[in-house]
Amino acid sequence: MGAAGAIRAESESEVGKVEMKPPITETQAGTPEATPVAKGRAAKTLDAREVNLFYGDFQAVEDVTMTVEPNKVTALIGSSGCGKTTFLRSLNRMHELNTGARVEGSIQLDGQDIYGSKVDPVQVRRLIGMVFQQPNPFPTMSVYDNVAAGLNLNAGRVKKSEKDEVVERSLRGAHLWNEVKDRLDKPGSGLSGGQQQRLCIARAIAVEPEVLLMDEPCSALDPVATLAIEDLIGELKSKYTIAIVTHNMQQASRASDITAFFNLEETGKPGRLVEIGPTEKIFTSPEKQATEDYVSGRFG
Amino acid sequence: MPGTVRVEYQEELDRLESSALGGLDLVSTALSRTLEAVEHQDVELAQVVVADDDRIDGRYLEVHQALITLLATQSPVATDLRLISALLHVLKNIERMGDQCVNVCKLIPLTGNEPPSDQEMVKLILTMGGQTRTLISQAKRAFEDRDIELAQDLVRQDDVVDNLNRECFRLALELGDDADRREWAMTMLLGARAIERIGDNAVDIGEQVAFVVTGLFQEFEDASHPA
Image (cartoon, rainbow over all chains, first blue to last red; front, side, top):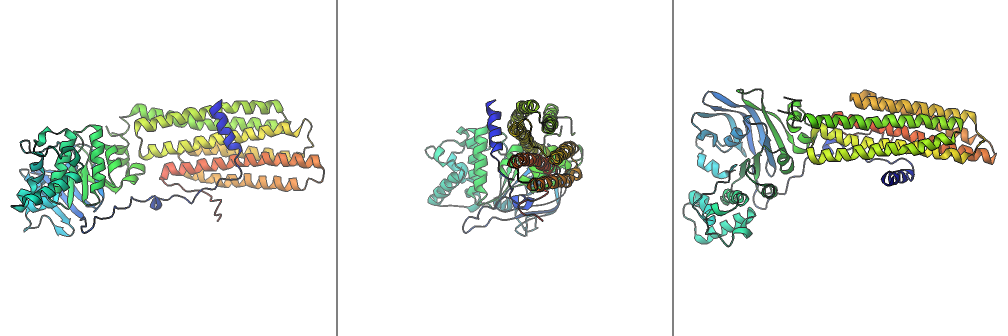
């Protein structure tokens, strides 16, 4: 047998013991190095402490304490209804837009309470941008106006030349410039799904936020567009703090540095943070059995 | 709820584990025959061991391929991923153990029909082989039961094999001036060395047990940095 013969020949030539390198320990394997921060601009830390979230009488999220670290991608995973999206939406004060919604606990952006009594929620949402599951460009606006929309809202009148510059920079940042530079005046809704999602990312980064929140940004996209967005996320983390909710476990393992697993004991109970840690650790040797069952796909 | 989904995947993983560990039974049989061939200078039996090694290699190739397929199609993570990684190592260990039996068996015809053998040395080698067989079955049980203590105990058992190997070396040195006898002793030393390596492979399997259970790989004994 050819192949087996080859195996044996190799073994016979073995002389002496093959010494192994020193044991690989958890700490040596370590977490991925943070990407260097872009010059002149430091991404910020988002700190949630004992956060409880309610829809009227119903408590959706219970006692979540976790940090979304700068220049890293933090993935929030967990089955449907576990509160991960609700939690994400509390991070830029979008949760309170629901009728009867309530937030307890504290969420701080680099030490500043985003729920402080004098803080303007609109300003919070400018600093902490959100990209949604369904690409939602303003359908009647051109590609150009879609990207510039946030500028107009946030900064009052902006000179055309400045606006041109921001639009180009944002579209380049979202890896979309080359595909749309010749049709900036065409409607944003005419782009493909993947392009529309990158357009929404360009719109989000045009206002230079500190943090980008993404709620299942690829679930409506095909695999190639998904990988393009994941690559983009990997690049954006050099400038921003990123948190992403995903149902796709492979996406969490590919695209994130930190993974947080949310779960709920049973339907009707609030979701809780079960475990958070380096993505590599969560997907190779998680601490909690519930995490193990979920990432292994053993949860029905 | 755990256990209610991915049933076929779980069954396949269980099947592959038992098939891979079954390779240790094949090695155990090969080692028994090897020792018998050494004891009786049985060239025919030695040839059977050499030919039968294809079964061990076949097991390696078959299970290895199936594990790669599982990796490609099922995206295993966490304990499953560690188990598959460990099984890939264990398969390689098993394949090597089989080759070491072949190495011993290939030496037997070299010593001639009526070798100037020293019964004390033959006895030592047979004792080594018996102890090594114990290590093989202990490694298998430790893996099946995910028993780290039993796995770590392999080091202690392997020390017995190592000491017997040194004893063989000492005997060979004292065997006198006769050239034929010295040549026989040298050949037998190579055989003892091969058996000693089988013990080392069993210890390596024990290290994989610890990896599956804890997620940390650590050599039980670091030969390059002895304590």
